[in-house]
Image (tube, rainbow, N blue to C red; front, side):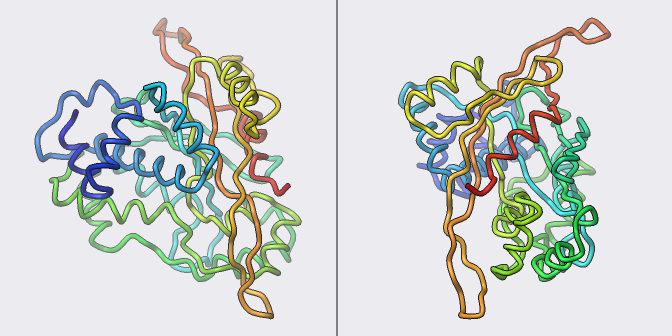
Length: 337
């Protein structure tokens, strides 16, 4: 096992959890080579993804149950991508608007734009980011931006109230380390250990508890924005790349799990996706009577199959693209029941 990855994981979650994640998740064979104590951007990206995957398992019981089944048969989860939601709106506190809040992290880690996906039905734009050092094996990020200007004035004002107190988790020291990582492609082990928890904090909700009135205003026009109001920049879903998504769906359905009734198929036919329905979570809201709790959709767990193809240059490669129709179908998994 790559000792850099092992040490970084252990610094964050301890040896027992590290062993669990290493045994459960696919790790690129390229990580069999490493330079002791010098953390490459790809190693840091891999560790970040492993920890974000672990975080979603703590929040998504259906995903946890599935991964326990995988572990019981000594299998491995192939983390294909994690999805996040942002809001391209100015005046949202200290946090940069839209995907900039996250791409300023992804780019130093070695990620580059891999595709643009207009999600017009949702009044959003999706973009995928693949790792330039090992695109097929290091998990991609699918980052979506919601566009409040396409909604009503009441909706826009609610967005401003909900997000207006957002904080920026990136400290000046962390920004300096990210700049050095982007310049040099690596950090020392102490620098990486210092930066990692700050990066993880960027994948949380950065604003305060929303008011129930604002939440209901947002929910009337956009289930996606309502989700952001309670969950923020947390992983919306994590995705296991499986050989046959139809077979996986049938197996999960037979177990009685709440999986999507259909499989989304891309226009090319090479990318197929389905997902569990989002697990419900209890979230707090501000109301005139004080703090109240409501049951709302949380995050979810997705499955994807990707085919290989021969590109125009004659090179065979895995289809790492996404599909607008697929994405809009999958996003419905966080709609309120």
